[in-house]
Image 1 (spheres, helix red, strand yellow):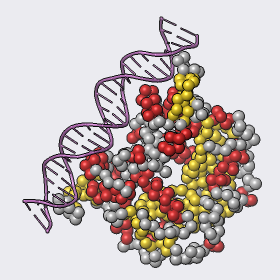
Image 2: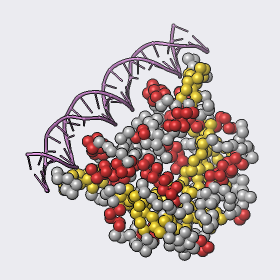
Image 3: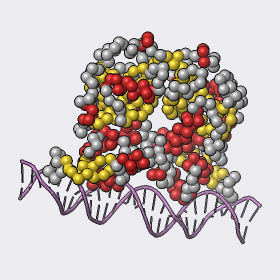
Image 4: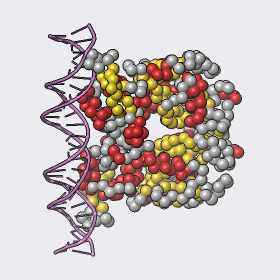
Length: 236
Length: 236
DNA sequence: CCAAAAGTGTTTATTTTACACCCATGA
DNA sequence: TCATGGGTGTAAAATAAACACTTTTGG
């Protein structure tokens, strides 16, 4: 009963929830599945874990193969193990969560696997339990971004505070006070102001900032208060 | 390459990090492993996932079998997949995290599997990557307990505020101001005062409280500020 | 009576919020 | 010049921190 030889063995998959931001709204990367079953249906990017790799390596390999991208930010989300979650054969899936500057990578995205970016509030039906995975990932994104400077991963190297605020507003479906948002973000000391301005969105122009790599790395894991009224965010 | 039939299949384990509190300090439940390899070594409670159950069901089944206890609080922690983590055969392990009132369950704990409670700051060497799992679980406990009323799960149904404070202090290895702690906890409206007092720890006696199930359930997931100076807790 | 722990009060500092106001500039 | 978004100032409110003080009671 407890001996290795008598135990069941399982297919192990990885599935990746990839969020991107195009300056307008938060989007999710999905592909049209290229093999049976459910060929042609929308699906998260995923694949099977191989014998000689960790699940994290599998996720990176699959993402690299299917998108051509080395994910700059990725973390494990949750392992899904419902016995009927895959219609073909019982498969346990380890889900990963990644963030991308959509603008930067969209040219480099290979078209071979029919990728598509869907607005996070208008997702198509996905195969298996992939919609459930996305819901959990959205919760985690909102939870974590309220406490840690996670959303910078979705922006280009140079961005303005109003752009950052717009991103936060689209993640939380809320409007924040610009004065307070400014001070709160700048008080974290995570940003360095650059000499030039973005003049596309206003006549006056907004200064560009870049992430201060030192303080970003040092403070990423400490608690911040990046979102107004976080008491009302219902975590997990 | 992408077809189900050609993929590797893996042993899937669950391992459980069980924290308990005895009124003095935080402890971890481990057992002496009863089978080869590493028979007799200290190990987390674990077992293999079977064909017809989810990983969560496997964790609950294994815990029930080995301890006799239906875990009142359990959540998935992380999936560990280093290729060499099990010396016998490649095994991927889904780790779970559980909290127990140690006093309540210690009689009921079956002795068959040689269980032992170790103080969290003086753990023995555990097999495989189990020490690593415990470290991650400790981080998560500290992280989550600073924001959510998690630690109540470690206390009996009736407890005093000084007892609760002592628990927080032992989890964070810190001393908190009793006046501020009192007000902070009571302001959450999570506790209901009972008519009687605990007179064991002081002459004056401290009122017993119980968790208010309604507000507890309703507010569990919202952000609170249960620990002084949370800005200094380094999350994850 | 008094030591010791429980619990309350109070003052100060810090953070958050709301919102008024000034600034720069392209059309 | 003036509408528009960028950015700063400020006062009020809420929260947090430090610490003094009062209460209770077994020995």
